Length: 417
Image (cartoon, rainbow, N blue to C red):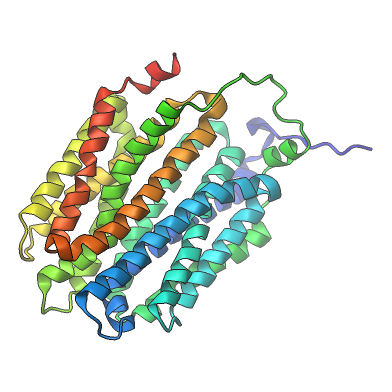
């Protein structure tokens, strides 16, 4: 006898089940994204100390190089994970894959605390980045398949700000924990989430149906990936991501270079908290901004605003002062808006039949480019005369993104062709 699987409609699901199980899925996905945000940026907060201790008091050039490897290979791992874990979850299921990713993130983050050399830190961050890429993909996929359609967009929007909440949290950790090795004990949190997920999460009914070849009975159109659309999406997403992750990866170190003799622990932690807070606020407001002025104008304002603040911040700041805090707040606000806008803008560039695959390519191709840029920034610090000049150079990629959006048609126009 053949087994059958049915998906209950929203009306068939009791209110108690929605409040108990689905809200627990929401919390797991939200805190999974938040832990990803914390773990992604915790190394940046402690980077000056980590590089100095594990380089055995080497030269400034050696510290720059080590820092570049730690940051860039983490982003490369994230890109690899984003491209592969979605495919893995298609094979073995969303719930199982999410538990595996969270557990892997926790293990490799926790192990950084016991690293005896910078090479070990680089390897562990690379592996942790692969798992974080999976968490970011699977949480959204799982929610899109199990949450009722009526409130799905709202819930997924809230979950998306989990990452900047995590960035804010990494600043708090820096303020509370002086020892960088103890700070990486934060890996225990995703381990706890992994244990809860493995016991509590149920597999997506829609995924189960897809395994039985029940889903997708309508004929699919003969859609193809087109290079111009893929290039446009990857460049627009990647140009913003280069500026964003250059700031997230190197801003605490830039602040430390301005302080010179001070330990800088409080200032570095405060900067990371501000980056996270601005990202949260910008992400929340991005949808409202699109409703008022449209996606294309929103994108142009976002790119130009981030570029203008970057020029003022990196180009005209020679020593640390209190004005840095409001400037970073404004910059992170534009960064936060950009993530909401890009999540809306990029998918609309493609027909629905190829949307998921094409969007995944644009997002993760952008991360590969960003990893190379972050690595190059660390290598160019000496030649450019400091972190400020290097950050200013890579902020110039925002102009590339602005130009590509300016000369392009609106997403709806592109899809109609």
